[in-house]
Image (cartoon, rainbow, N blue to C red; front, top):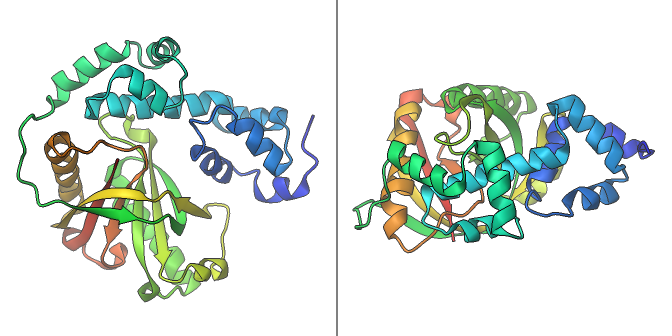
Length: 287
């Protein structure tokens, strides 16, 4: 039955908004029914829209995201296959292995072995990396979603900066945060999700900032993060910092990689700085 909720049709029949809402629930088996009930849209309508937007059902899209997260955990941690299956929302290891093979062409154990052969095994000894860690509360930001590759991140920030300039937003009233959802060694290059976001010091300011079809409010889940700062050229600095955090520090730290997005915390509005002088801190989600 088609949706009769005009608010949903005006404000939510938009690929970005719906995908973001469902991203936060991708490991929840009842997420689709819950989402439809909350927004007064039928499951039929949601399926039809996803087929139009992405050529697949919302359940298939969520399954791909879950299996992408599983691949990251297989490659970057020593968690067992069963533990990873449960983390990404599968009730049994058998059903997880079948779904993983359909998506990646190999079983999880084989994927882990191939990933380690290509990208190196996890170190067993502690390496000296100047990492700090702490806990962040849930972060309410306004952000713009981009999909492509990390090579395009400076361009993304210039686009976002044009919106900031147009709205007259006072950049001194908050910080700029890049939200990274994918691992470039796992996710295909053209499918990496990156959000340019603004985190105001006063959350009430968000209600005064106009949104649009591609600028939306979102809340990043709080929790523990490991942080590593740097200054330099983005294309050189980011791979180095993630390599140090994920491949050198994390395996012997006693922490595990968490599936919340990683954050790039900028000291200044990035589009106003020369690209070779960007100053920011990588914040890796840990648990």
